[in-house]
View 1 (cartoon, rainbow, N blue to C red):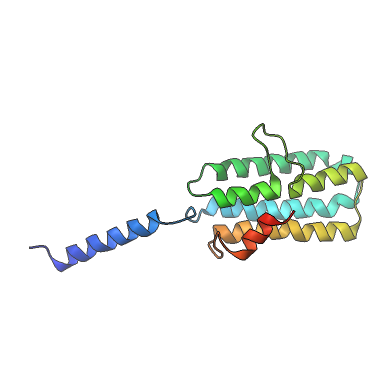
View 2 (cartoon, rainbow, N blue to C red):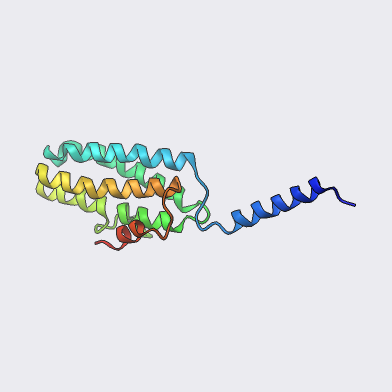
Length: 160
């Protein structure tokens, strides 16, 4: 006859497997969380510098774009991570050919800065709020402080 401890252990293992199998998003990933929080700081800092000529920051923009592309590529290959990838696409979208989607938040900001040459502080601060919100929601989703179906996630994804 099986011991009560053995049966309890087997039941606990089955419950854990079922819970993990029913998860709708990938488990917490320290690397992903660290990347989103670090690049947020860099993007917002660069946006602060958009009162200066675009041309003097092209190299920095290129470096940040490359970092963002690497993060997105990492996220695409994590299981059960579709909602995070959609959020990244809204924030920094790239089409299947690797071209920036100009209607996504960060590329549209870079394009406006390039077109205008410099940006006004009022516009910068307004845009930074939207960019910061996107990064914060992705970080909160990664940390599981919010759920994929949270109204904040849906609002962020549906705003144009």
